[in-house]
Amino acid sequence: MIRSVRAGVVFTFLFVLMTAATPVPAQTAAKSVASAPESLTAAEFSRISRELSEDGGYFRSDNFTSNETSYLHVVDKIREIGATGGAYIGVGPEQNFTYIAKIRPRLAILMDIRRQAIIQHLMYKAIFHHSPDRVQFLSRLFSRPLPKDGVPKRDAPIGEILTFIDKLPGEDKTYAANLAEIRRTIEEDFKFPLSEADRTSLDYVYSSFRTDALDIAYRVDGSRGGYFPTLGEIIMQPDQHGKLGNFLAIVEDYEFVRGMHGKNLIIPVVGDFGGKKALAAIGDFLRSKGLTVTAYYTSNVEQYLFGSDLFEAFAENVRKLPINERSLFIRAVAGRFPHPAQWPGHRLTTLLQRIPIFLRDFDEGRYATYRDLVTTNYISP
Image (cartoon, rainbow, N blue to C red; front, side, top):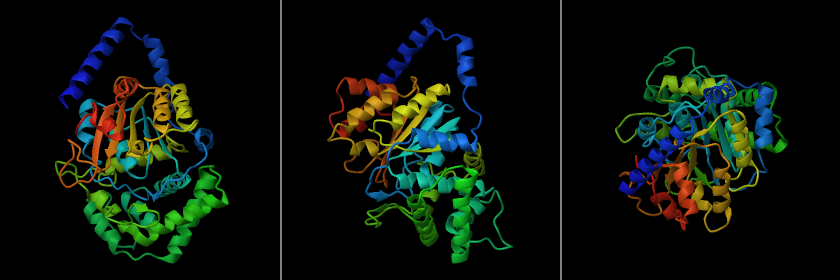
């Protein structure tokens, strides 16, 4: 860890010297910031998503929810570093909304190799669209209609909201009506065409939330198998200081994510980390909008890239992204070995790393294994 901190200090010091010697013209910087979109039309949102995407691939799990109970452990460090604004890239389901809420980027891209994951994010977008508060969001997500009386207030504690929602009965009639509304919203309001396979996928994902509600969890090959935390547990999971921080736990965080969705600034993309198109295309798109990557949440995807040429391809794709000396990776390290930064009681460890440090270490051949990757020059929470 000392080596990691020293490396970061040296790198930052050198960068300051270089930027001091070659200042960026104020006019150029202002023009770059001005080109970042305040919003996108639905047609632009749909076109960008489809143009950046590549063919979908297979992954063995249904990532309905995160299984990373340590996801909040890096939030304080992210704030301490000052990682905010710019562009956010992330993989996986709803944990991205929490990181988006904390980082407050100007634009976010959610990229996953599975087409189903993108359909799920379109489902979420539609639910956000119709849900001005957290109670209505959870009611629609689980197809549990709200009664006329006794509904928690807008600013009620999340624990109270979850207890209330959990007691409501689900209804087949409500599910059917909600599914039709979500499908119509995606295709008509968001201008996003769905194939027959997409509609089947949407039905599968939405029906899974209707059936399991707060008990829905990460599934491997269609089965939970072993222990994975439920969505309810993820929402109520505190950080290492005992503080709640999920995007559904804080009114302002929910409203920020909903606002970004309303401006069409959270764009789902089908893409492979080591693929030939999507990540490079994302880099070109962000650069054209004058945006640099503030944070790239990779979960533990990188561990699946070792043992083939995909990790090298991923590193080269990362090199094509618009980054600066402050750009960060957010990683979740699977519990296959005890990590020095692992927090007691958690199977996974969430870490940060400067993206330029990653590229430097990659060029120097320091990553022979996944373990090398996650134990070299990381930033501990």
